[in-house]
Length: 490
Image 1 (cartoon, rainbow, N blue to C red):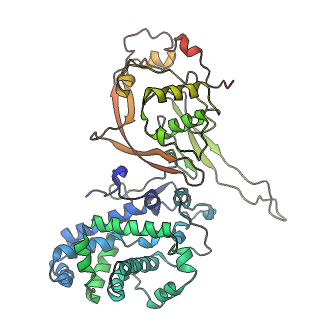
Image 2 (tube, helix red, strand yellow):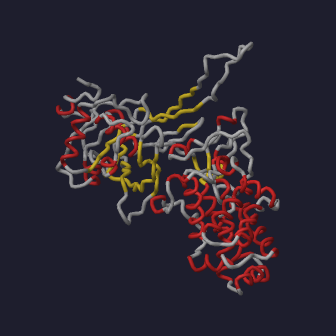
Image 3 (cartoon, rainbow, N blue to C red):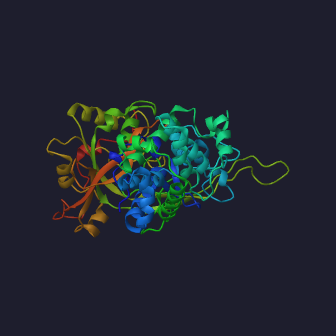
């Protein structure tokens, strides 16, 4: 059983907003999470396994009889309801909830993720009002009625979502939600077009995973589930949710919370072992004097690759901060933030290559030689080391050719110790190549709604191009390099 929708972000039929919502967290330091859409697909596929491998024939027949004995449609319905059970988490009120039980839990919300892609979350005095099962029932029933289902039929399906924590829904509370002028619009986003679109996306995403086409959906919309089937489908949904919530590494593990440039957030901030495409594009935009609000569409078209010439060492920096204001009548400060662990890569060297039309390369090279603003690598505390720009090289036919054959950039001492080692290359994957996905493709650097997407990358090793050369000195010897000072702004 594979995790649908998480291995190839590029192919997901979901917007950045729909992918930004959290479904599960470690409930501790906030360093591990599972996006909501992943938990939805996990639950739907677990329900499929339960139907195929575990459910008694008599139980399957009871549900199938709702659809005139159509076991295939009954199986799809089971998958759909299990997959959509946490729809109520796709709301402002749930996304605002603290994700840790620590003393400073109010500061531990993951609302920054949906907010950075344009969703308004906000703050609520009671983030459990309404509960996400009740919210999910309300939202699913509203959606099903919007596509032509009657209220009674829609509620027979939506009630399973409302019951997935083992507590049957109370019709009075649903009525209060429908009539409310405050709870549904503000807490559930029922009047916010962006939230409505996200909720619709997730419903249609689960519909696709379950294999429900328009004809099947129409048949479901004419079938009111019996109380007996509602109970059975609720039980299957509860079991699927329970199994899919097991975060052991061998089952449905959480993943690291990644920030804008593929490094983590909150109290634990990682660094990658090589420059990211986000970092290189950001540096080029900085050199050209672009603001965060300016378009970077042209830079996204650059082909990018990097060779790790000197691995470097990861160092850790412990930081904390506090306000200068003290509580009235106390020596304690108003707010002290938790200690953060920030990791940096020191004493590393890389060969980065970009491929683009010659005119664009000329423009970018000129900007690097005469940058508009000071340059840095990922974080402002990390200025680039000399030499930064190795020039334009027409002798190479491709990025692979350049990264395979360009002279090794390691320092003398490192070359003496590591001459026989092969060098790792990380570059943009081409169509059809075996690849992995990392979230370092910047769609916009805007402070109001930063947005990053997945990038398919290919990793492989090549022989050291300088393996047979004298290793007594450094590779940097060209006089043309010495003319360039990347931190000179005259």
